[in-house]
Length: 144
Image (cartoon, rainbow, N blue to C red; front, side, top):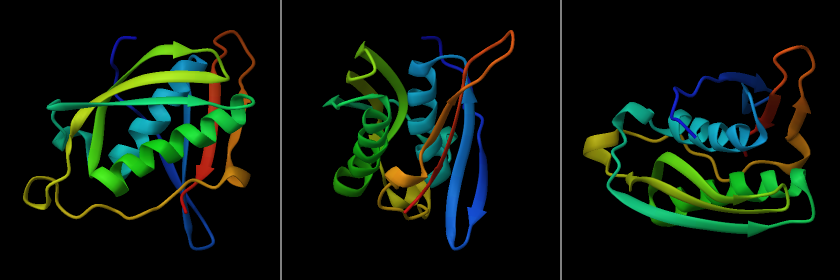
């Protein structure tokens, strides 16, 4: 898919921060949600394409797959310091996905202080198909 700037909004619910976004397709909502996490943590403009990580997941349905995907992307940062800049799916069917994430490892002098979070709550995921002539999807979730 061609790259485009990720646009999203943040919101507060109690003491938690949330992210809300829209995209024209399911694949794009998955990609944009992961890139929004990266951008929220460290501005994407600061991330270079220097290394690659692969994520392969399988779940019982779309919502569990989305939850596993977002938490796998969060774990790449917390365990390896990896910040994705570009994401390409080689497989995506709503129950399985395989993605190649291109980005770089976090370094404090280059990226500054990252906003901390550990996971995305499954209960907070709200994925909806948009009606109307343009269609697409909206997604809202809380960071834990």
